[in-house]
Image (tube, rainbow over all chains, first blue to last red; front, side, top):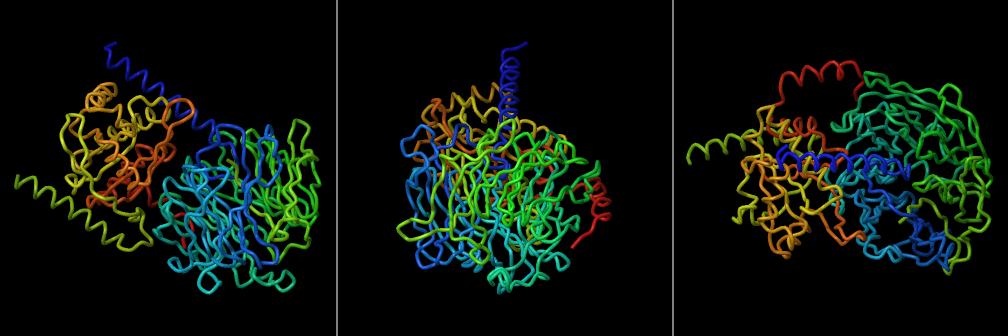
Length: 405
Length: 213
């Protein structure tokens, strides 16, 4: 073997190792875009996107110390003032390189770009802008990282109506393009991409003109029930599948070579599974009945378990989905009133939970961040971790989405 | 020289045809993301190299450093595979690959030449570039890239590969998961407006059998 060939083989082996390492790390933090760089160490900071509860003070990002060795463990270290109130700050998403968080707000259409890499303990607001101006879309919901770009799903179109759609931006906030949803499936919500299959799945909720109303006045006929399958690279719609009402969080299974994924149908108290065949054609069916109003969905790093937060029955359920024909309820915890967003650590052992859905839908004024420990025998609440979001200087705050650093 | 100019003009003409099809920011398969500023850096042969000298060609740009033991070997390895796929499709003469160092203090031209030998890289279609720290910092900033010291003594950086069209406009950004030789070949073909009949035929049955908007 010549020296050049030898080194080429060595380099190729290193490349393969790096590739395998990347694949190994990719499933961790299971609800993130697969294009986001994963944490290679235990989390130190938990970022919580907070709505000022009475919408009189500015919304903010709370930095919570989650370093188990820290004397300030479980305390709010810093609040990043977002500079405006009444945004209904909602979902978070890292850029692919994990240097910035994009935050979406459902009432103001503002997108917030926040630098978390320069000083993870004190994030900085880099940019805030009205996403409706350039896109014509309203209710930005899910920020989803693509390589060097962000894909944002919107819940509404012009004037808070339908059709909803998607828009792409550069990581620093320059608008690139948008896609409107088709007339027969005009409601938007979440997005999940499987690069191996070159497929993107999107789900459907209700537009701003409906969700801005108090819950009792919302029109239940204005909720979507479609799950759309897209050619990811081409951004072309391939299939429109019908689920039950309000399919929300889309999660591709993390099992090796899986061609299926899950979605929680909030208004039908159930989890559904979409399944692809050898030709990449998809069907969808109900997988299991859950507690009431399942609002968030995540899964264990090995894809064996699903965790679903049931907002109206005040519980989180852990489902064993290793046999898709026979899902089993494995464990249940009651973290407190109306649990909502869940964020699972890369090792699958700790799951942080918040309890605000929307200011128009919350039925409690008791807002917190709590921790579920996950072991071989299921979930258990950690009684030592309880961040009270009701006694802040600016009054109570509704905590929603979370990310870690 | 005239022949080369005519050849470049024909390639730009192809790209322009594609641009007309993908005119606006919407509904394009490979949208125009932005146009990075032109730059002049130094090649592995210690010669000045201007990005705009590649107008008319589709360009793949990676950012690596030669002593990297993280993702750079995988990036360069994938670039090698993409180059082979482009060569098999007869597209390589219309494409150029660039690899810009993230570590100009160590990656002088001689180090770049050694790295190219390591990977058996022929300089005809692939140029490695270095420069002063200030020059590289400016390029990194303009391309949305960054580099910082990592805890293990290496450099932390995003692993992205950029695809430019014949006008020097950024049309796609890949990462290691997304940078697949077949996909790169298809994207290059699209930018060159030379999608093969075979590819068209392969796409049709799937499109026809599925529900469309």
